[in-house]
Length: 141
Image (cartoon, rainbow, N blue to C red; front, side, top):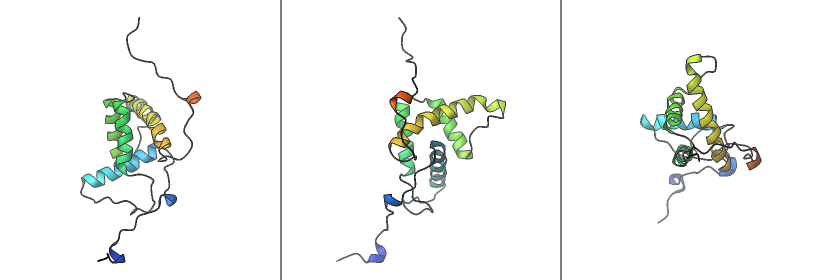
């Protein structure tokens, strides 16, 4: 017994997938999808106006890996959640948001590399010569 063609799912080809322009765009898209899911929407691959090279959970997994590697901390994740739900970044023009803007920029800079490496964000990954060097917070002798 075979399945009728009208009942088979049509999956979008990754050849047509359009990567995001920046890590910030990928994050806002992810938060919009997670908010819609929380509100009861059924999220399905290839149903949007633009085919993306990932699922929202792929971006969250990159963020989770950065957290487990101690590249970001809970303060970064909190700022990403709060401003991601607002669908805007903290404003550099508002002095009260200066601390949140710093955390936002740090988190976006650190999220950029894994998203580019996976093809979620367009453009080449930065080479090791251009990478940011972060001081080790361990003991000092």
